[in-house]
Length: 488
Image (tube, rainbow, N blue to C red; front, side, top):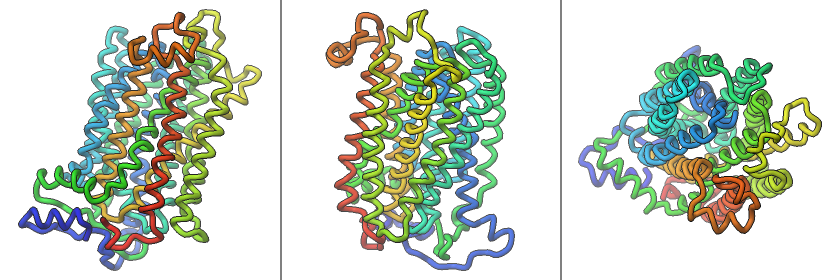
């Protein structure tokens, strides 16, 4: 029993309803069709399809740059509202998940994506409904906080210690298929478009798919009936009061402060989307090429997550060795990819992009191949970063209650960073941006928005800082096996 559960038992007269997965209680897995359906891999695949139909399609829409709209600023403000509420909801998401249960939490979480897609459809039909995107974004932030916390708890609790990287990669691959399908739909429906925004039919197709995704959580097996592949029982503890659950947030930080060293890495993990989607894809390409880029981006993420998952599960290295190997690969990717991107970023500004004579690149243009290869490597880096972040948390604990809290921290801080980045992209010049901007970007007099180079520089710096801070955690907390006494 972990210290979190011990403390809860001391604070509550009613004992925990279930034992933690860390107790390694053995059982017999069912046979036949039921056994196949309740296999952890099948359940993680279903979890992946929940993300496919919700966050995956959201990513496809966001990956178009400006949500597929001409008005980039409204989309950026909607994302800022989304991630602001997301950061709060995710912080308490672990406690909510432990009380409501993962399936109900997933159901509530997936419902917000239909509303958000519907807001883009509404604004495509009514020009004065831009406020609806911001409102729907705020609601989706709450829902997404619940969905991702429940997802993280199940994804990290179902596999054995030796298979966590593989399970994370399977989930991430299926999740990113949502972006692939969404990007393919957007590209197909806008192939002949000469405008700078997607059509109404694209939003309708996305809306139908997200509505279907709401039903999937109720088809999943109750986690209390699940056994891992080695026969150990997977059970999510149920606790008697919200007070105990909220206290567990403080307890997780007090008993395992090493998680604080991952906070900068969490902060960077969604920050880079703003520059990639708006500062690169939206800025440089026409609508049909943006749709093609989105399709290729999310397709590439599948391979990036699978590669990192396999790397982190290599049997001929110890778990500690794999931790440092994964860290080194991320460091090389961050430096190489951002150095490559800087070569392009220094050649354009907001002012030059806003000029009527600026040519938006098409996929048939000469030189496009080099630009799309950079986008592919950004996709690799993104999926490898997320996979490694989940693996690091999973290496710290096997306790599903603690993992739910860690995942809540991850998604909360990640979303706070995303909210700041999207808001910065939508904000006109102010005191916070002046001194840094004036010294490094020549477009100060040509634009009232924070320059692209600033967003790019902050992205590079945060990624590097996240890896630097994570290194001491890997050194002190990652062992070759997590025993009961390691559940600090």
